[in-house]
Image (cartoon, rainbow, N blue to C red):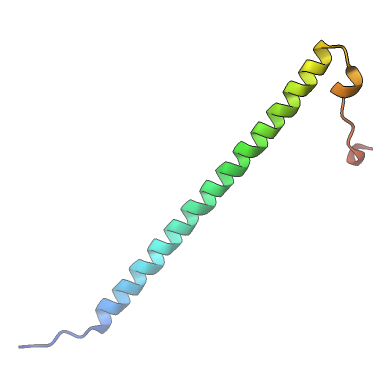
Length: 71
């Protein structure tokens, strides 16, 4: 009986492992990116609603937030 060398199987296993890990890491990075965008959007909407409510209450000083970097 002819014996099959194990080296090609190890190379294929390593290749599939590397490809699988890289695909998984890319998917996780995309997931984190989407979660951060969602968090930023929620933060923006919260600030927008606070400003909108302040305008309705005619509290214009609260509605306008001036950041030091805008000077």
